[in-house]
Length: 326
Image (cartoon, rainbow, N blue to C red; front, side, top):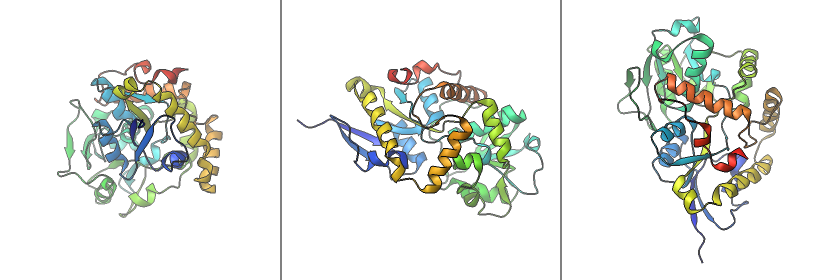
């Protein structure tokens, strides 16, 4: 008898390479994994029903729950980390974050998780409300689903998935934008600097991160005890209903793949993750729904309410598979 086929949209990420390469299987199931598209496109495909299981934007996931789209999450978070270094400006054209009030801010998607977190930081740390600024979007939205409290200017046609940053960098350099909020460099580069994002956004003259003080970023993370969750793994509820043993088996498979990830990680990555754990005092990739994760998900909901993306923060119990709370 043929095994049930479970379709999955996943990133080609070291912590799940063992699953993608077939070193780890799922007892009783055949997995078909697609990983060769950009994150934005992969998330778009999942929320539009193309996969049984998929990595998706955490902010988008919360919005689908409000609209009664039937997904549940596993406590599996690949992409985490502070978003301060994802806020860019053009050197010489801004001296203080407070000057952003009333200015035009660019982002690759208004509803993207990285953008939601960056706006949340500007709100909490600098009292800059979303409605205090004008907004410009260069890329295609994955899922919005609500009227927004601000007018959003959009590039038409939008740039293709994965090509949104270059356009924003060019506008920043020319002074047509005063800041830009983009994705990239989660984890230890988000804490300590480096990574590929400054180079990719620095394609045009003068474009640099607005917040680049490592000690200040670490202090803020430790003070708030919130460690942003960018992406998570979710399943269709109809798939769970059809295969009730699937969530627990998936969680174990992802944990096993994480144990085997050391052979796919460079020495620099391994050292970076150890420093990240040391700063936080816990492993942010332990695949558990601990107090930090709960606090973080509630903050993500609060920010989306302020930004007009949610009516209210959904209860955590409605978001995750039952086993996440064990």
